[in-house]
Length: 311
Figure 1 (cartoon, rainbow, N blue to C red):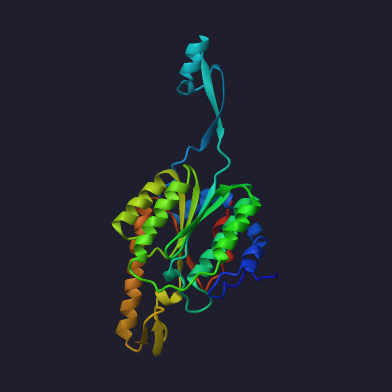
Figure 2: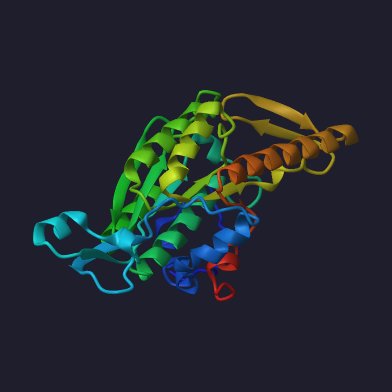
């Protein structure tokens, strides 16, 4: 299947053939370059990474110049001569894609639903990670359940993740109870992700302002490296031109009149303030935020951070 990766995603349902075809444009990305990318996103804030960064390699006899803090006292006591622990840089970092597919993500006003945008971003990240020989896993939150796959360095695992992202789901109306599911998603991610995992959180972050959600985010960020990718639609930032529009939540139907200038300006300002508060909450946790929109190409978004322009 030939696709144009420079165009926005399309449709109300992720297409498996397109997710598979994103393997080729994903070669333009290298998520191992995440360090400088994260620094750019977090605005100079500290990284949230709490992993070890190094792994134990061996114990050998102490040599002049070795760091005395690395002396293995048990081996030293057993052998009667000083021994020190040797470490090497941890080069493999598992990637966990945490994808929000709650009913509120099934929304879009132009090219695609937010859920489709999240699926294509996740597919690009998965293919890039596999191409870098990193283990890939996923956790997908749905209406009343979640699907998970622990990170593995396997093409079969990536194919299973893509199939789960493209799986047809029954329509459910969004409701306030779904905000609590965001907390459940974070708890599950904390259980699946081992220390040092690179977590990509793709969501519209409905419910992220709750106190329990902030606490779970803090706990997850203590031992993993989180990149938050906020999936949004232009209609969520600004109302359409003046006119009468039919809107629905899947159950109820209403008419929206956008002729009043005060309504438009108030809506845009409240949206801006909510997004700024969200960004500040993440910055306090050291979590960088990437803004993704349904009217932009997913590849273009990721290439700004992980493409050739990032060294």
